[in-house]
Length: 428
Image (cartoon, rainbow, N blue to C red):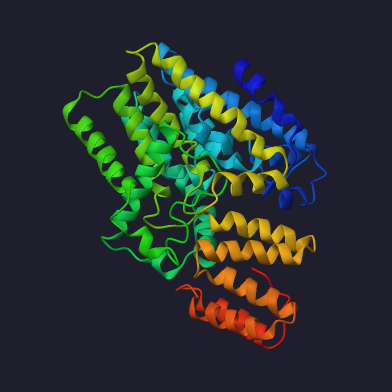
């Protein structure tokens, strides 16, 4: 707890970024208890300092419960430290809007620490969509009977879960996302392989990842390509997990791998309801992987400080992206220059500040990275029309119309029709 509070103390000077900003503008309830409850669950903001302090305290508490929940042993102590500093957890440890993922982890680890109160804590774990299925992994724990309370928790939160899923399907899913076919296993294995590598060795810590971007739209061909190292790394990882489950006696390492797989599987794009890759999705699952890693490192003591130092050094500089919203986007463009969405967000901010020419340059950068993005082509058409470059604007709106993603025809068609009717102030 102490090292967490010291390590993340600098976040107390950070401001709101990304999703924090619109949430901070919501009206606050007058009742003190309601204010604090909504602040805890992440539905409102009070002050940046208060909210960052709460984020740090909750992350520190999860780390303590990782230690106690997995037996209060040397292995669980190493796991807690690895988890505390793993850069893949930055969106739970330093970003206020990652609160739902932290609460799920808090509920799961508390259920293991206080099994007699497990049902209450599993209710907390399943409150967020991120943890709705995760308690299934407790079947591999020393308290498998905890899962008995899961159907009741699903009954309590089921209506809210269905509502959230329906909203995601309506707003974010393309036709390809809704299809279930054997080729989707390629996507699943690739995504699983990416998270396995990134959670063990932080290859790229950034807010907007380029991997799997637009997998159901302009990036579909690349997403299903077999020429991808993460496909074969994913096959190797899954093969190792299956081999260990079959050949080795059930132990803490197996439980950690089961936790990792079950908690991560919903975010592996088999049926995509979310951003293709997001580091926050690995916050809860990485507890299990750090348990497994600790069982390995325990036999090689010299490697323990090496991994902790690697994680802590990477995280120390990575969390500086949350200094403010401007730096968050700059950090993303710098660390993931092939992520078109990072450049798009930067372009939108330049447009809002009336730096119109700079915004067009940034959207052009997006087009170079991913030439067939409807959103980018539409925005370029709008910008060119407002600049009175009508011929080029018509060319871009025609390109945009040809690249409407499957499943978004109705909404995109209305936008194009409005654009042609003269409403060219719309940006996506």
